Length: 194
Figure (tube, rainbow, N blue to C red):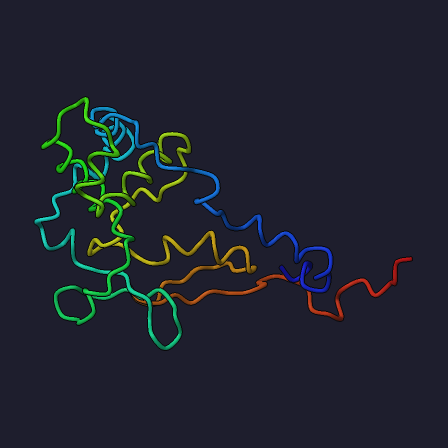
């Protein structure tokens, strides 16, 4: 990123490549059968279906957005207020809840008819359909588990900013190095290129 900053006119337009508008690129397939969606969940989210969310350690945290800085924050469900503002980053729990709810429906019912009765599962149904086509679309971890560390999610994002040497100082925050090993300005070649 230190090499990109001076050339804003060349790279500013690339910011659109670092995000995805999922509404444009993927519509929910309501004609899919309940059996097919259940099968998808068992294939793509088999790791999530094995988690016991009745165990408090597997449901220990919640993600929310801070009012002050509008940043994602992690709360402890057992002893912190705010779980009512939980963001839907508990993908494993959502996948398991959708999978369980689908068993009350006939195999040949459509996803559309299911979601008309259970709109709370719309987000997860869509994620499952995306996951079928894009195997790297999902972080495959219980993001609300007691042992989850935010650094595990932040490495890729922070690398865009030149971060390296990720040093988790606690389970809530991370110390990083920016531009470690990068040359100082006086060490750069000062020749002006034509």
